[in-house]
Amino acid sequence: MANVTVVDHPLVQHKLTLMRDKARSTAGFRTLLGEIALLLAYDATRDLPLTTMTVETPLESMEAPVLAGRKPVLMSILRAGNGLLDGMLRLIPSARVAHIGLYRDPATLQPVEYYYKVPEHMSERDVLVVDPMLATGHSAIAAVNRLKADSPRSIRFICLLAAPEGIAALTAAHPDVHVFTAAIDRQLNDHGYIVPGLGDAGDRMYGTR
Ligand code: URA
Image (cartoon, rainbow, N blue to C red):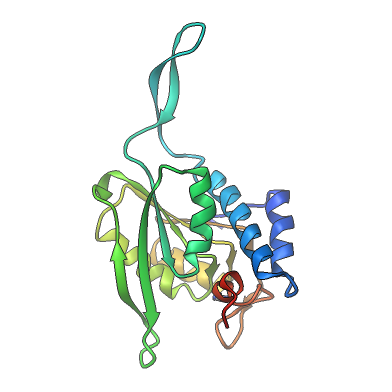
């Protein structure tokens, strides 16, 4: 599938299986999510542009690679995105952080924005939008729509699990956005849950219902 990368690293796949287990504790789920987030971020940042800087090693001076330009932005789709955000910040501690809050209008079923905060100079930054579950794709599409109004240099979407329906919707609406996921499951059920999936990611990471 063009524009979609399934991060099939054995550690990611093993940890994802542990997370799917309904007997996994809240603490265990959160820890695993943080660990997978770091590994997903490693893959999703593989092509960030580099420049060089002069560094003095104990032996001599050299031109060595460093990330080019302004710090990348991690944008969390509230609230479940925060679980991925924490792990990714361990890999990219200097990243800037953006948040978007969306709720589903009960009448139209469309996402409505209630919060949006991003750093300055967005047009010079690469953005990684994070949300563990790409289900219908409605929130992801709305978040990217809003983000594009700030014209970032590039946008990637990182999730833990995706439904084929969500991938189709997001890549159709935003063919320029590359999607990174640990797995693509079978389908959505009638309630919009990914199956086999892992349940409600927000509830499982925060111990709510
Ligand atoms: N959001 C979740 O947390 N889980 C799903 O299966 C779908 C959307």
